[in-house]
Image (cartoon, rainbow, N blue to C red):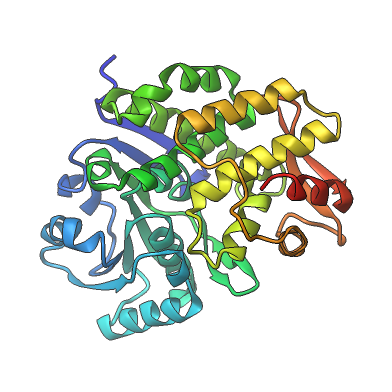
Length: 363
């Protein structure tokens, strides 16, 4: 099979089902994505890094519509309520009606904020995800999680709002900085670590090719991770059960990102460190073996991802931030841990002393 051929993966949600298209040249395939727009108005939300590279391609496909663009500064710190307000003001200036569409052109920050803005305008309008980072392609663009950050923590305000379509044009990865690309690989590893040991083994075998951005290997990794996530979302759209497993490493990782004020670590870097902390906690609790932890650490290191808590971060402060995680219930920590590669599970009532011990020894 030609791994660079267009791949279509359906997220099956009844009358809200939508396609994820993965391939080359998709941003310029106007006939494909223009057909997903149902009204006369469109707002393209992007950022100051991505827009100069790709906005013109989108503009050519919007000929004949009333449209405008709204650009964020680049970075996680700009995923804020203030910018949601500005996006909504831009929709108002456009005269957007209920059949308008927001197009999210960028990475996870753009996609999350654009989706949340779409959920808010007139209680919900269409939006299309056009992810331009590896992390957004394999994770945040699929599944309908939208939101913004607060000073108290990451993604504490948000809504489930599914896109009309996801357009993952792998050509955009050519302009992605190496650090951003590696951060996206962390989300690929996460999917395998949760529930796909054969895929994890494939990643171990192809780590060098992925690091070198071999197109065939990258395409295969994206499609396999998206297919896995699409299946989970179809079974549990609003995270009442197994979808929570997709948060392996996130409780730790979000605390690390927040402690670093969203500038010290990229999201994927936080997830990488967080997964390893979750593995160490699982080992400490007798759920998994040291060999499982070591296997994960070797793969993360081979992909050039960080595996230690950045210097200067206080373990007690990180624990306090973890208490704000949305998965917690009844005032107790509820974490995603594992019994080895591909065997993640939800664990409630995790003792804070054990968590603190792991945090204190992971710098």
